[in-house]
Length: 221
Figure 1 (cartoon, helix red, strand yellow):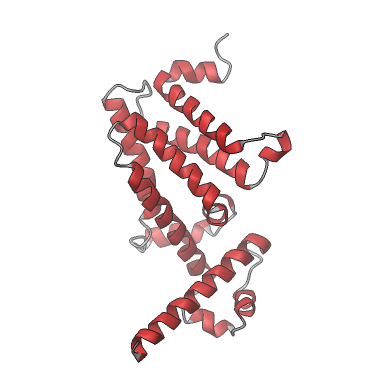
Figure 2 (cartoon, helix red, strand yellow):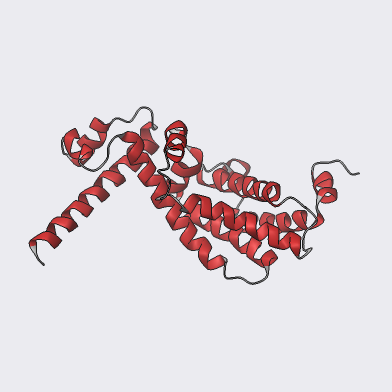
């Protein structure tokens, strides 16, 4: 291995150490209470070292978001190959839940933890969002799948984006209850099986449209 290759590998390894330390501290202390100095102390380097890789704490958090969404979209891309859009919708939900089960730390940071949302929003407004396409592509895949279901008259809900938000909200709620161990409070013995069953009910719900939604919330006797 040449000198340049070795330096590049060492740089990548340091960046990885910084990200891993940041994830641990963000989860334990919270984003607001975690400082660059604390992250530097965790890897036994000076804060100046962190700034060689990240402009500030927001950029570090953004990099973690970017990585998590790329992992999620990569998994969803496989589900996108399912031809029947209704089956694809079910598979997208299962992939999403599996991502939360397999990557609870990433999921917490991406979807649950109070985060520098303003900084992320400003990044988009400044046109710096090209490196973070995984999040948008994941949601667009869900919306487009809903639209295909609507076009093929497989579901009775007629607004794809609203249907996508409904599906995302339900699956996100289940994922959050699981990673925060809230299912233990109600003694659900097999949360994975329960969540997959609820996912199947979600498919039935969107197939039934507004009538089923009204029934689900108690509007029909």
